[in-house]
Length: 170
Image (tube, rainbow, N blue to C red):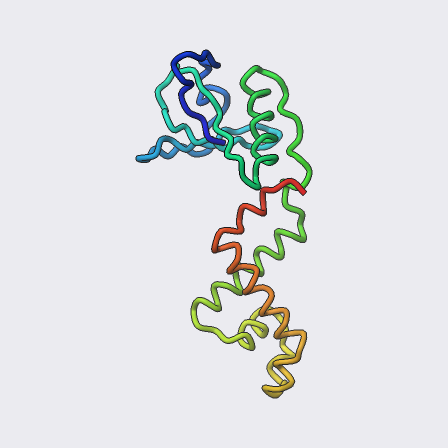
């Protein structure tokens, strides 16, 4: 969530977001301050473009394909600011056990591929031992190759910017 100082003619909440809970992370940079605030129902990730304490704040919501996700996140943060329960994370935000396992496999496969491994080597490393006994033609048409290829393809897409899909409300 992007927070910045309100324009001069507006008033806004002068609440210091850093006082709303325990900080899980706090990183200052040239573009402002990035913090993660703890919340039992799910953490809040903030980018404070103007980190001056006590300044009234406004939220910046880009009109992009993540708009609905950003609004849901902003509503949860707004409730936190005013001492209300933030409620559960929107459906689809918490990763299921299956998605965590698949993401782990994708990262392992991508690491192998970036290190120069072939799809056959990736398939074998990912537990598809039958790939070791297949001829080149058989491997090319096998489910083991398709499995390894899909893992690498999907991990490469996430690496190249599709990681935001992990946060979208489904």
